[in-house]
Amino acid sequence: MKQPGENSPEIMLPDKFIASGAGGGFGEVWRLSYPVIITMASMSLMGLVDTFFMGFVGTPQQGATGLGAVLSWTLMSFFNGTITASNTFVAQFYGAATYKKCADIAWQSFFIALLSTAVVLGALVPNIAAIVGAIGSSPAVSGFATQYMDVRLLGAAFVFTNFCVVSFLRGIGDTRTPMKVTLFVNVLNVGLTYLLVFGRLGLPAMGVRGAALGTVLSQLVAAGIYLGIFFGRRTHERYSTRRFRLPQGSLLRRYLKVGLPMGIWWVLEMGGFTVFTMFVSTLGDVPLAGHQIVRQMVHLSFLPGVALGVAATTLVGQYLGAGDAESAARSARTAIKIALIIMCSMGLVFVVLRFQLARLFNRDPVVVKLAANLFLFAAVFQTMDALGTVSSGAVRGAGDTRWPMLVSLLMSWFFFVPSVFILGKLLGYGVYGAWTGATIYICILGLLLYGRFRGGKWKTMKI
Image (cartoon, rainbow, N blue to C red; front, top):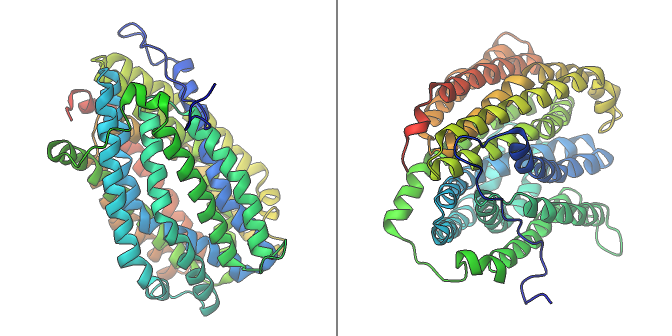
C-alpha cells in the first residue's frame, strides 16, 4: 500500500556504477537521454499549442504570443540557468555516494528560487508594458504581447520550483519521472488552453491571455506534483529531503560560483535570440509569423541535442564524483555522436518537408513561403548546434561554466546581434539576412564549445 505523498511517479534510481573506466556506453547514455527528449518535446508543445491556437485567432496574435513567450523566457532565463547548477552538484555528490548532500544542494536551489520569484514579481512584472514597448513592434503585436506576458510571468514561482526539483532528479540519474510528469501536465495544458482561448464550457474567450493562463495553470499543477515527489517517503528515506535546511554559506557560495556564470550564460544567449526576434518583429506581421513558426519547430528539433547535453552533464558529474574521468569522457563522446546523427536527420526533414511543416501553423501562402525558406537556414545549423549543446553539457558536468559564459558573451553580443542588424537592416536583406547571421553564429559557437571539451581541462576541475 502506498503511503501519503506516493501518488506521483516513482523515482527510478540508477544502477550502480559500472567498473572503473568501462562506463559511458550507448545504452547508458540513451537510457538517460530518451526520457529528457520526450520531456522537452512535451514542454515545447506548450509553445506549439499556443502558436497553433493563435493561428485561428489572427496573425498579430500568433506573432505576439511567440514574442511574449520568448521575452518571458528570456526574463526568467538568468534565474533558471543559475538554479540548474544544482544538477552538476547533485550528480557529483551522488557519484561520491554522499546522498544527504544531494538534498542540501536542492534546498539551496529552493532559496535561490524564492529570491528569484521576488525579483520577477517585484521588478519585472510592473514594467512589462515598458519592456515590450521598447521593442518597436507594431501596436497590435505590442498590445497582445503585453497581455500574454502580464499573465505568463505571474507563474514564475512555479517555473523555478519545477527547475529545482527536476535538476535534483536529473542529478541522481532519474530522468523518467520528469518525463511522466511533463506528459501528464502537457495534456492538461492542451485542454486548458483550448477552453480559455476560445471560451468553451461557459468560460469567457480570453484569446492570448487564455493561452498564457493555460500554461501557468499547467505549471502550477506540475510544481505540486514535483514537490510531492521531492518530499515523498521514498525520496526522503535516502536523501533526507524533509529535513529543513537553512542557507549554508560555504555550500551556497560554491553553488553560485558555478551557477551564476550559467545564469549569465543563459540570459546572454537568450538575450541575443530575443533581440533577433525583436528585430524580426519590426519587419512586419508576416515575417514575424513565419519566423515564429520556424523558431518553434527549431526549438522542438534541437531538443534531442539538449537532452543529450543533460545526459552528458549528469554522467560526467557522476563519474567525476566517483573518480572515474575516463568513463566521464566516454559518456560525453557517446552523447555527441548520438546527437550528431539525430540532428543531421532533423535537418534533412526540414529540407524535404519545409512547406508541409509551415502549413501546419498558417494557411496564408505568403507566410508559408517565407517560413519554408527559413527552414533551409535551420537545416544548415542543426549539426553544429548539437555539437555545441552536448559539448557545453559535458563541461558543465565538471563545473566548467565561466569559459562558456565568456565565449557566449563575445559571440552573442559582439558577433550575433551586430550581424543580425548589419545583414538584416543595413544591407537590406531583412529576415533572411537576420537568419544568415544566426546560422553563422550557431556554427562558430558550436565549434568553439567542442574545442573546449576536446581540450580536456574540465577533467581536473574541482567544485
